[in-house]
Length: 238
Image 1: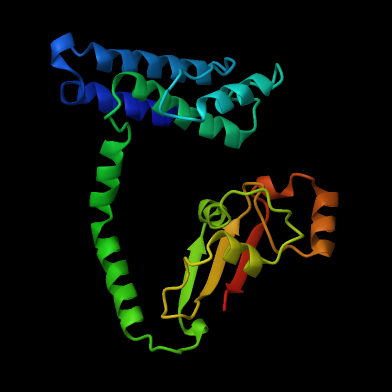
Image 2 (image 1 turned 180 degrees about the vertical axis):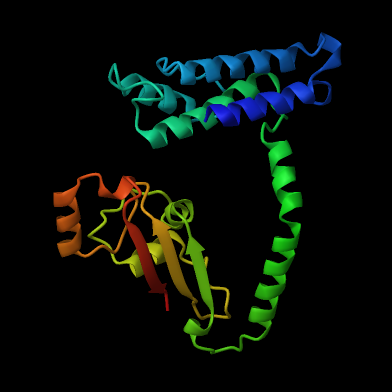
């Protein structure tokens, strides 16, 4: 996380005349740089989380500050709080800082453009492949002829909307369909076969049998966040 902040600071320092206001000697951009530097210092020195600045246009500030206040002393720092909360807090704090002085500035613009430019060939190849696949898909064709492969813990979490599903209590088909009722209706009424591959690094999971889940919990209550176990799930929403 500190590395992300360093790159954001570097981008803003290099482009201060592009994003800052020359009429006030770029004080708006300098203030953002100062506050982002302070955030980085707080994270690397394990200081307690600071509350967010008011944002009249946003409805989540009070909720964030309430959650920060609820964290017990000794568990309200970057090294002691739940990792997902810490990561989300950092990104929300970045946007909170930026919105105060540079509301039109996207702190990740330079990296987005860099990533897009470096991925143009892959994107073009993927589009061509999908276009050919869909063009060859006839109406009424079996759903399992078209397959989607989703790999990685982040994709798995997004597929399940990062909700607190009970790992052993839901059918993957039911959950995926509930989260995305129309997302896979791309084949003229049929649904594709989905193959999900991931190493478990977060407490989001479905479709684990009751027997296997009990065994895993007995061996290690934190089994699904340590990256020691993997998932390979095949689901058809048809």
